[in-house]
Image 1 (cartoon, rainbow over the protein chains, first blue to last red):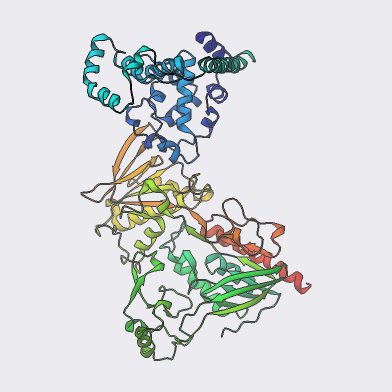
Image 2 (cartoon, rainbow over the protein chains, first blue to last red; image 1 turned 180 degrees about the horizontal axis):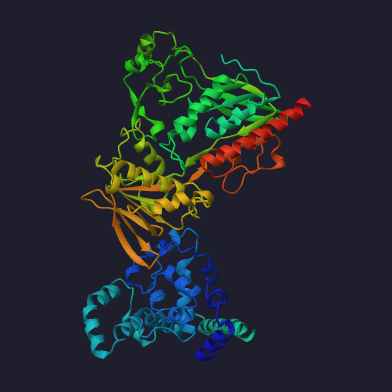
Length: 211
Length: 426
């Protein structure tokens, strides 16, 4: 499905990635306002570890580098510290655009391989939607064991003290392994998510169907 | 008591900087009665605080001297210093302007001999040097001050120091019993030439103007160059008095920024280009300047000035809005952090001194004015028929350089003359 949507988007916007971002990416309509001053890139605490800092991503969008942008690991590195947003002279919601781009890249099936933030994001979501509440125990264990059983045991042993402290502080319960707590109206919660998914699909559909 | 005759054919000009002087003189020289009001104890405004101005790199004293001579020769022009407008009412052709005059405590007998200042002991921050140095409590505001008369700081009135200054005067020029006066002046037209103030650099948190001694503003840099300034014209940095040979200029410090001034202040690019010439003037090939910019705006015919600076091997340009400044504790050097957007290179550059090219904002808040004036989002006066007989001259209307401010002020004089001509039935 993602590939089909991706293909439809390429068809629809061929040669105009900026327009595609403006129409489809959350807060993407702000990208055209960037004046390339570079203050976001200089202000990002993780900037030295990004392949392409925000202002460079914005320029790449204008330069139609669709593949490079959507498959980049850069926007997945954003920790939402909002330093760039606070300093941007044009008031761009850069943090939101980064998350919008990451989400859009994932939807187009172009997410980077083995990007830990992306993996954790998916794990968190899958965990959350089961019961409407995060199951800390399962999420923690899932995270520790994401790189295999042997690695998982090693990490778990290392984090033993943290786990014990969380239990003492009643932040985590060993009983959660049996299913865990959830929202009172679970079926209502799931119906709401289903509706949201339908709306989102319709929105993407509307953008890909209409030429 | 200040004796002034004003009718509804009088033109009042508020602000005695380069624009106000120009409007007042141009109108007075057509034969109109003009009153020029100035808040400070002298004329000349912010231009008199510059070392040189672009593009011809002349000293402001030269133009100032010509204007002072024109003022002295003109019977139609009355200058009142230390005067502030407290209220304004009426309509086009019939305004009443209330003016509050604070005392100078020195009358026109003053010969500027300076004996009174020798008797003074207290020192205050020197406003003329943007508080970089001190001045005495009895002082001549600057070497070119017009009127060329000393001023006694109100804060020493009633002390023995003030009496000592009075006793030192051989000409009977000191009147310690002068009081605040209020005048109601009639006018047909009023021109606001109230100018600008530098944007408050303390508000630009990442640049640390409030924390780092060696981060200064462009207007302060002008004072360092002035032979009468706080460093006697030497380029010494504030932290340790070391010669500042490697200087960074940061453009758009507070301008073109939604968090600060939304508008382009228009003069700061040229001001920094000009100031790189100062560094050359002082240190020759040992003086290095680096300009950090978003884009250079050397408007229209100033492009050749820009090209000349670009050709100077001692000046480099980095296309980047600096993200933040830190201080190297050992040396006191500011360290600039950011990304050079030409090639996306991350830098951490040390300089001896950082000059923030702060922008211009209107010095007066016209929105809270007693009479309705159309003001734009940036706080400058818009030219509009609904303003009646009230006009802006120079930077009260927009961010302008000296040249454009003078042109604008001349146009404002013509508009004011047209109003009083209508009143006269001409």
